[in-house]
Amino acid sequence: MNKQLLEKITEKFKELYGVEPLLIRAPGRINLIGEHTDYNEGYVLPCAVSPAIYFAMSNREDGKVCLNSYDYGSYCEFKIDQKDRPKEQWASYLYGITQIIQEKGYKISGFNCVFGGDVPVGAGMSSSAALESGLCLGISQLNNLNLDKMEMAKIGQRSEHEYVGVKCGIMDQFASIFGKQNHCVRLDCRSLKYEYSKLEMKDYIFVLTDSKVKHSLASSEYNTRREECAAGVKAIQTKFPNINSLRDATIEQLNAVVGEITDTVYNRCKYVIEEDSRVIEACNALNNNDLVKFGNLLYLSHNGLSKMYEVSCKELDFLVDQTKKMDYILGSRMMGGGFGGCTLSLIKADKLQEYKSVIAPLYKEKFGIECKFYAATAEDGTALV
Ligand code: GLA
Image (cartoon, rainbow, N blue to C red; front, side, top):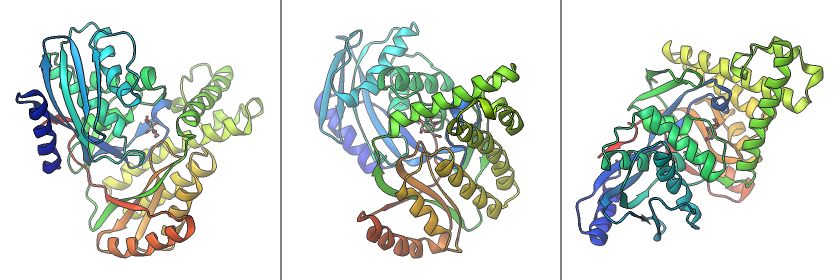
């Protein structure tokens, strides 16, 4: 919990609105393994993390929504029932949440909100999901809606689809809401059943290395990947009509339609089918305390993301490749949607400093960029403070 930041946000709120606010913490997320599997109805294995967005909120009687971004010093205002989107880009995520809740038939009042956080933007830790989850819980509380957690995750996802234009899966919003301290959570994105596993990692920890690049391809290529997967499913269905998503398909079934799809679509589908089994294997490895196995699966995941799914980039590939020379690192891969952001590496805790001092100059020399590091511990999900 970033108490200092929370205090500053609370003070700012009181200065602006003169009442005691409702306070909420909504964290970012990491994903241990299972990338681009969520929208294919497969498995993911995320955790909520310590970086978070904090919200101070109170109801208003005049039907206005007054949003203040503490970090950027920006302000945006709209009527709760306003049909035109606010022109401020950053407000779309939040405006979307207010509209979707109302479309679902809930009556909500206007509100004041000051928010700010320490989730690095563009690093792939899903600051947008934190924004959506936090606001959704705030509105639910202020209006006694009692929205259940899964409903809130789906509202966040819909806001991203309809108001931001990224056809994301459910993982980020789910992780931000359902996270649990010291646990990762395996979600079956078809049934939405989930299971927590304690992270018992002996003397190993996860570290994030932020490449500090975010290639502009990210959201358009994301939507293209979804379409490619759908094209694969359509082809498979011609021979196996009971297959509804890549989650249901086997490599053999994919191979049976190889002549009817492009090489690209074949590779995308093969990656997803393999990644799904890696999540299951990774969970077993974690449960058996087999971190060496877990680490190997991370490398295999990266290889697939880079070579077959083609969502990596030279900076991420470089960071992962370097770790292969370090015997104190058991595995590493790019994390999240791709085209930049962080790598996630499984590293011996007492070698963290050594790793940083080796990788930072190498990365700087190669790309002229200072990479950043974040400890990746599992924390609780979105909640009132
Ligand atoms: C982004 C999306 C998620 C998921 C990941 C890739 O973070 O928001 O739904 O698809 O990419 O695993």
